[in-house]
Image 1 (cartoon, rainbow, N blue to C red):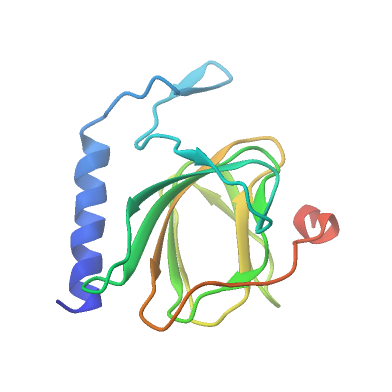
Image 2 (tube, rainbow, N blue to C red):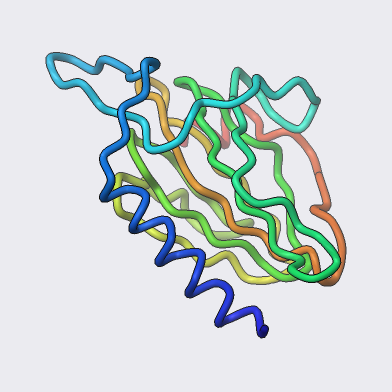
Length: 161
């Protein structure tokens, strides 16, 4: 099955799952509005590729037949990835909260629920939560031409610009 067709199936599946309105006991409070999680929060990320606290729930692991991985990442306020790139690019779907996305040499973008980003192949970028709000995203990453290339930490100056 080609990657585009598979991606369509993944996106349709995500849409169907989100329509089921699953309730998660770890729903977060933001002001007076309660937000239900589409996916479980997952496991705390404990590597040096992130600043702050982030959580990962793997939804689809890449394998020899389908080399796409899909994961839901929950960033606590202020948390973010290091600069990194993907040989085949990446797609980010914003599920809740307020986040940031920036490609090297471009201005930082604000991401909110319903936003989608298509990051080009081999383009250094970073993403994460805003300073005052949790951010939940789904990341779809092809592993056909190799793993993520992790780069330098995002400085506070860059993050806060």
